Image (tube, rainbow, N blue to C red; front, side, top):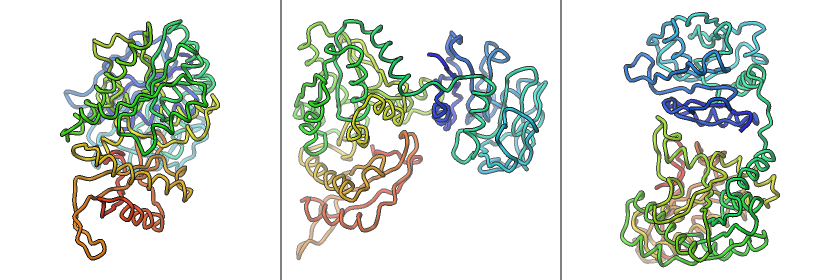
Length: 510
């Protein structure tokens, strides 16, 4: 991959945001754990060290070998990285008198410095550290200060090594993207050429070389990721792609037939398989969310194994795995960041399924997937579809799964989503859905007392699902939606609206 930036992850909650900002500059980057760097660094033209929850003064602090990077490639050290270079380079890092966290403003910028070109004194930055650099490392030169932090940014003379104690990747650092651009473009000399069209051309060529004349089975879900993956593969291997859309009994109302009808017009070879009874039987009596995900994942693989046997000489299973799936499942590609939850399409296949896996979108964030899809002329109706979890309504029904609960939630979800469309709100929301809670509450309908289910509505805005905030939907819309649900869906007598952000909450409830 040309134009490649290596981000070494020390466990910061912001590491993925660094990658997002770099890619917004049309420069490709990869995140690797600090303790498992690539053996071959020849393809990387610049390196960024992330922040970390560790202190460099701690005995168990990350201590990577940078001998193949430092002084040999342009290097940007962020927060922990800046303190690491100072602490082990002849400088001094000590506990700060006050925890330096939150907004600050640059009170000094070294004149005529390429790293801060286009950035003015007073520019707001975001600090997040409890240690501070009291003395710079050998050959260190101060580039910027804030009122409380003298060594907010520095460089190493005679090297393309730069370090900052603030976080340029977060929104609160107003000129953070400009600083990253200065480093990557003006100093490291990278071209801003990683575009959706370039990704398509490169990926199609790689898929042709990797797969050859082999046959590939792909599980379609109706969502953006699997659709874009299917079109990419179709461009590469044409008729050797066999798409299967499985009804796991946990889809939205009427979704199975609606999606099959839409794919029929896209030129893809798609087969619909109704395995709803198989999934629901396997889920009977299970309440644990992780177990439900595993059951659905296993059943999904079994269905594919059955279908794959019907395709003569199939060699590959394609999946629409994207970067957030990988990050949340395997802890920032195996590094020190925390695992959030498992994803049913991450982690490989059992030995009995003799298929190799191909994941053409594995390194893309959600908004990048949409841009790639647009470059291939996939319609807005497909690309604008809200994300929908692979396990479907199973993780929106808290507790055990029954056909009756699925039916109730399908009706509630249909009213909510159709209402968003009717009110012109659907495209203003990144993801929306309804949750069926394991709670009954007292209500009054007519002259009768009821004791029925409670549902929670959830609508969030985001760009890639890594962070999200709840959407302030109009009161009138929520009022009408609540009335429609209670009046039209037997078994529900209470509706609530979830106003939690991610973090600390996740988008889904399970």
